[in-house]
Image (cartoon, rainbow, N blue to C red; front, side):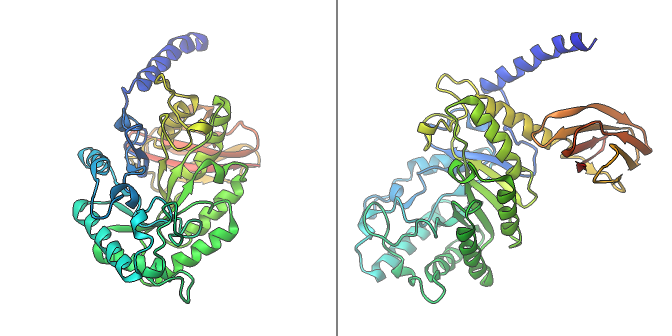
Length: 411
């Protein structure tokens, strides 16, 4: 019977996956309380809303892209990104007001007072044109790439914003004060890379966060999840550093995630290792991938998830399956009075109490794989055997009206 069921179900699964690869699917994180988004550009727009439910412009929102010539604004691609978000009721993150890269060359050698006036004009223009920005990156990469140098789009306008000052970061505080003035109802955020893998950078970042929090200028914290930050970084280190960001009390967002993959298996394995650390963390409210089709920033490293012929790579297929499992019963009420003990488990038996109706129980490993056959438990207190090796697992309980997910440790 099991073999026959396998023969019947597998073709259906492959049909569904092929349909998804052709764009016949909903956004991967539809119905989930956190978003899984992506960047908008001409290269990334095909089938965007079939996969992603949040939008960030890749390059179109950078000051140098909009105002390469003084007082001549090119909003075309930024308008398209904003329209895509608003037409489909998707969150829109503006990337980015101020940065030490891709800034207008003409501003670099202006007097400081004139630079400040231009910065204000830039803020005012964005605020007027895009009144419904959901998340606004005020400053990008303040530690690793501040706008303090001339040449190569470096901006060279830190002194116009007050310089480093007594705090070493006065210019950042000034930037956020201006942003609060021009965007009074918009959530303001900070963004940086090499945070979850570098303690020195993280400590500096936390110092900046504290300065902004002291004046109620910061509403969210972003960190980039590029492969060069996560590769070879232990899971414990990543999680511990996310915990330190979470301790600020602000919502945390993964702003730029990609995983290199010149080889399908290498990319898949690394997605399976890293993505759950982000997606399953309670403080993280959304993850934005930095491209999914060829034509993205890390093409040479194979960071795309769909090939040039339109085929989904294994990492994308796994990503959909993992997020779907993590959202099981997400719109249902929690199971009130639920108790599961002991945990950690030593003899591979647990007691589940507080069930009010027939409830299905499934056990997944941390990679999202179903590792123990589904069972149905009756109302009341039930014994449940966990026949698995030592490790961390997720216990999913779901009834017609309720759901719960519980982490289990088997010793």
